[in-house]
Amino acid sequence: MKTMMRDILLALPKTDIHCHLDGSVRPATVLELARRLKVKLPADTVEGLLPFVTVAPTCRSLKEFLDVFELIYPLLRDPVSVERIAYELVEDCAKENIRHVEARFAPVLQETSKFSSDQVVEAALKGLRKGFKDFGTTSSVIVCLIRSHGPKENRRAFETLKRMFRPQSRLEEPAVVALDLAGDEARYPTRDYASFYEEAKRLGIWTTCHAGETKGTENLRTALDLCVQRIGHGIHLMEDQKLVAEVVRRKIPVEIGISSNVRTKSVPDLKSHPALDFHKAGVPITLNTDDRGIIGIDLTHEYEEALALGFTLEELAKLAVDSTDHLFLPADQRARLRRRFESEARAALQKENA
Ligand SMILES: [Zn+2]
View 1 (cartoon, rainbow, N blue to C red):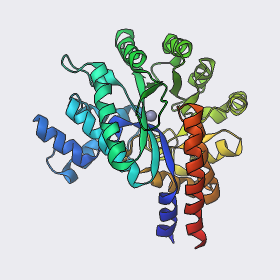
View 2: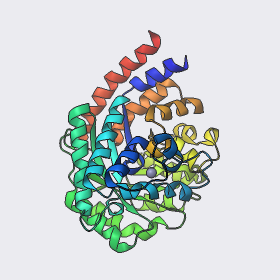
View 3: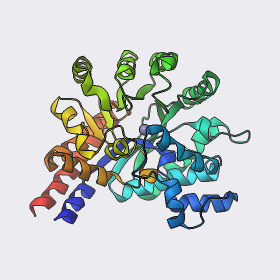
């Protein structure tokens, strides 16, 4: 019975709009990249490496979660590595019928004196483009600023975003489309990065922001004041009903990552996750992986977790279809994907009745 449900969820056409490229690396690839770059790792088998490249259920905080990336980054400061992980992300997405993925990353975490921030993005686009040709899943790129970085580094990333920003006129050609702010939210408030969001707004660059993932609603308030089009996580939203009403009125989707929130202790456990409360309150939500590699999940698993929270299969199919409305794409391209999703979702649901 359980397998059958997974089959239906697997067959649903899906999007992943909150997906960190650097958090999506396969453990086996970490090992191979290290061998190629002659970087020493704490283990030389996939099994031995798993505790170092995946976040354990005993992880206590977002900070501890982010520490896992320290081992991965030295391997990603290289064009071949970046192209490869982007390509493999598309392959992994296609395997579970994710039709469009918005991959996000912070180019300044990967740049070196020989590998500029622009080149990091170019390498990712190359991998995504190749991935589309081989596996058919389309994609785009969201550039992240990092809270713990100084204004100079974030400015560098933002200039890359400005130079490479293209509102994607053809789904088939991956492009840089949006701005995000990631990192330790508890220590670095969103208002310190307001000027980037104001500039993005002036330039017509789409924006999302990690907000309300850790305690309090102040960062959510700021994100809304900065006119973000989407919110990353937003777990603490329900603590302020005025904010809920505003998000509903402005139809701002929350990018949910259920397993990620459980793992970073944004919520104490699965059953405390507010995704269903958001949905019942009329907040648009989307289901996403966040960091499929280091959490050790896929998106289909996230749909299974949503079922466990009390969503019905029909509600999940509708969420998947509606997720196309929230993509950072021109309206005609979103509509194109939506039509495709509607017919594919109908076909997937028929499996249940067969
Ligand atoms: Zn995230």
